[in-house]
Image (cartoon, rainbow, N blue to C red; front, side, top):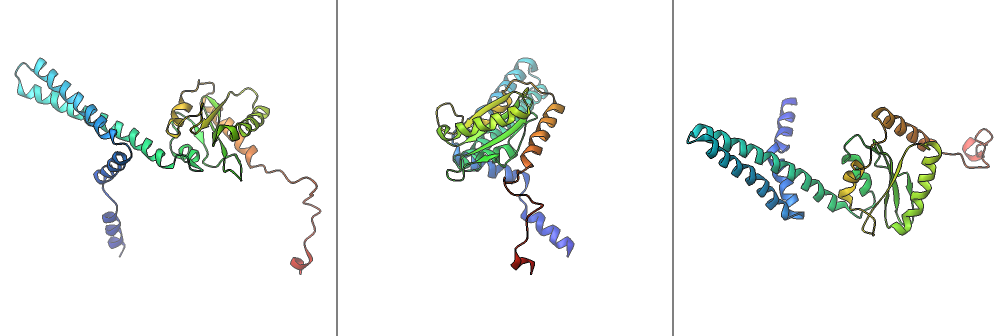
Length: 237
């Protein structure tokens, strides 16, 4: 029975080439120019390989073939790189403008030593505007999701909170949206990587742990002493 289940799972899971084809179809649907860019970056190394093979081969077919194969392999590699970047951009375009889109990018799209959380640190319950936080070599980044006119105050409040506990750590304010001064969703990872490095890797971990520990310490409402709270009579019975 176990072998039958393993065989059925292997049949259901698409192969590597089928997955790549599905990614290509999705990317082409949302970004028609991607296929032509992939074709261009594939053909350029092939043509260079042919030219170099003819130039250095001096009529030797084996040498020419080696140069052509090298050009094909380089073209395939470049085409896959372009496909990966365009697929990521197409995926972000499908969720752009939706609540939680920034959190999705922080969960799966960060590189270069940046650490982010998909859960916002501040949310406006009425408008669904939110502020997220990421920590990396560039310091602390506070990222707003929503119109700048509504989120600027939220960003300023969170910046003051960070400055109180980490006064020497640089803070970057980033707005994601369509307003002037904001950036598109797919540009967020690049914006984080472009910040000037100010922290070491151990310092990034220490800052992240410090902020997370403060975030989880929920304050007890004023006027309530948990040691003096009496159970309701109905529940005590």
